[in-house]
Structures are given as C-alpha cells and as structure tokens.
Image (cartoon, rainbow, N blue to C red; front, side, top):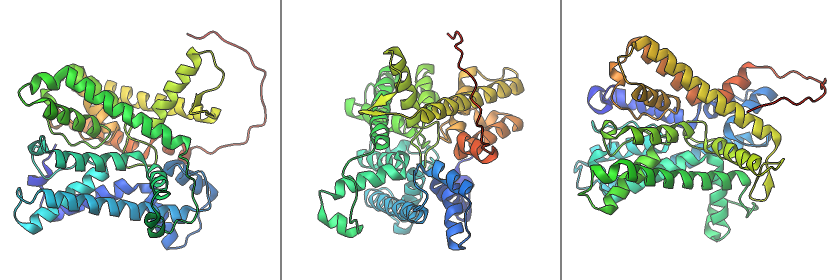
Length: 397
C-alpha cells in the first residue's frame, strides 16, 4: 500500500481524484452519459443493464436520471467541501491548501473511496465531531443510492414549497417506496450494530480514558466507514480478531444499490433475512412493510449472496495457497473482503503480499466494483425457454 499524500505529486493526486469521481458515479452512468452526448441509440439489452445497475424500473427516463445523478453528486461534494473548509480553518491556515484538502476528502468520502492525503487517514480528527459528522454524512448519503436520496428529497419537498420550486417538482409521490424503506431501515440497523459491537469488543478497552462520547464517536465512524468508505480514525491493526470479524461482515454487506458503495448491498442482506424469517414462520410469501417481494427478487438475492461469498472464498483459498502460511487466515480474509467491497481498510499485510496475491485482490476489486450480477447479465444471453417440467420434491437440510 502506498501513502497517497506523500508518494504522489499533485498531478498524480488529481488523476486519482478523477478516477475516484468516475468510480463513484459508476461506469454505467458514465457510459450512458457519453452515449447520450453523442446521441448513440442504445439497445434494449444495454438499457436493461443500465437499469439493473441504477435500480430504476423504467426505460424511458434514462436521460433525466443520469443528469440528476451528476448534479446531485456535485452538489453534495461541494457542500461537504465547504463545511470541511470552514472547519479546518485553524488546522490548515493556507487557504488554497485547505480548499484542496477539503475538496479531495469530500469527493473521496461521497464516492466511498477512502483515499486520504494524510498518512494516518483521518486519525488526527478522531475526536472532532464536526469533521466526523461531515465525512460520515457524505459516506452515508453516497452509500444510500441515488434513487433513495431522490425519494427523500421529494418526501421533504412536499413540506417545503421553496424546495419544490427550486427543483421544479410538479408532481411526485408523497410515499416512500418499499426499496427506500428497506434501505433506510437496514442501513440504520447496521450502523447501530457496528457501533455497539465495536465498542463492546474493543474500543471501550483501547480508549477507556477518552470518555464515553469520544468512544462512541470512534465506533460510529468505523461502523459507517466499513460500508464501504475505507477511512479510519483508529489503527485497524490494533483491533482484536472479534472486531475484525464485525468489520468483515459490514464490508461484505456494503452499501445500497445504485450507490457509490460496494458489497453485496443492504437490500440483498435484508431480503435474505426476510426470506429466512418467512421460512421460519411457515409462510409461502416473503413480506415487508405490507408488501410481498416478487420471486425473481428472491432468486437474485440468492445468486448475489452466493456469488459474493463464492468469490471471497475462492480468492481466500488462492491467496493462502500462494503465500504458504506466511500470514494468519483472518487478516487475509479481512484484506480479501475489503477488496471485494472496494473498502480500502487494511490490517497492514497488503504491502507484504506477493505480486500474484495482489493481482488476485485487484481482480476482486474490479469484480466487486462492477458487481457480480451486472457482469453475469452482460455476459449471458437470456434465451426463451417455454418448456416446464413436472414438479418433484427433494429432501434438503
């Protein structure tokens, strides 16, 4: 691993920043934007792939969706940079340097990239509530997904006339969709789960002299950043194995569909939980918020979870075979999960891995960023199959 702030020149850092921005907006978003600019007609298959990645269920308003994503992204990043600029007034007295650092970290946070220009990430701001809240807010908003944010904006706008006029909203639903409800509730549960578990397992012991509010601030930041931003305000290698396991779970789940985050996504985990809940209750349908989830969603959930877990286990076996017991299993699993979720957190062993192991992590990062399901859809042609064979039960479990 290389320190971005000290090992790269300003032009190099700017190239990284551009790549972070492109990755945050998404490869499909950029390809769609360029297709709209050059007015190239997209095929139905291409639109279906874009719809799957953006989590949009209509094919006719792609242009408006893309421009909304771009405008919303820039507004949030500029707002975050402004707040950081004002907060870091006493820390970085040189205005242009402070502006550069504020903008870089704002974009990195919103895009869930985790790149920092400080050698110890954001550890120097571990007990600064304003910096922590600004960075985590950017991470959360970026990780919720663009359409969740769109519905939240519409929900707020119905109470404030000036917001409706600002965004020229003439008609919109005042009710949040099932997708938004599941994303918000699951994200909240995961954040609270991370804060409680990390504080109980490690942080209360490591920072027993820092006060309850500071320990909660540390736990909150690490719980948020593990899905999947990659900043840290505490040295990861100082945590115990139990905390690593909690972070592995959070990194594997990641953010939400149509967002800047990676992982198998919050809706996938929520659907899997709801399916298990339905099975234990003996119900045929999977339900949430007085709605029934379609069978196709259940199948996609199983595929995404299985593919994600399979990729991680395959990479784990390969790297352990390459390294020949040079490293303990849990740190290797931590690095692999971090790569799959495009998180960036590390126990410190990545730089010591062999080149071939690093190549495995690179491939895993690429697959994790694009999404296993998106790659599968783009590679497999769906054929019409009109034959249905008779049902027959088998014993499972």
